[in-house]
Length: 158
Image 1 (cartoon, rainbow, N blue to C red):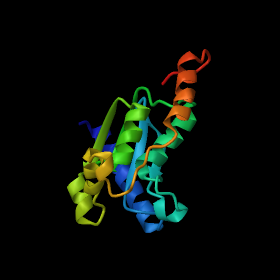
Image 2 (cartoon, rainbow, N blue to C red):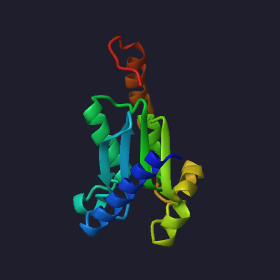
Image 3 (spheres, helix red, strand yellow):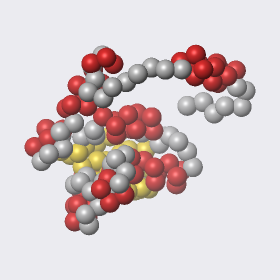
Image 4 (cartoon, rainbow, N blue to C red):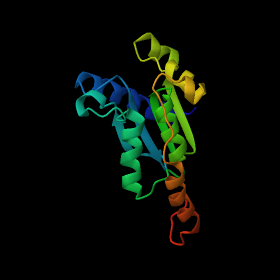
């Protein structure tokens, strides 16, 4: 970790507090850095936007991708005030930054009421044993679209 990394993390922490103080959502902030410059910032906006996906990391990733005109964060670094939840972790892997720094961990988040352990448990559970019922239907019809994807000539791979 460098002094510059600490600077970027301090900004993520500052955003967490700003979002919290403005009642946008929970106390979480994130920044995306490319070439040693902040290109996007975000804080949790779940309750102010009624959007359960508006976590700090997701809002920062969305802004960064828009600025870069890309769905990937090539050569970017994400700084987040807390270890990413399972949803944000998935978004991070899809966005493919080269590195992630985080401050608080999932246990710290659980201590203040943001416990994601049940989601980790659900991911590991068999579909038939999940708390929310999942039922598979119309697979054959959906597979037709998947088959068309495999032969589509002008698709953008990701």
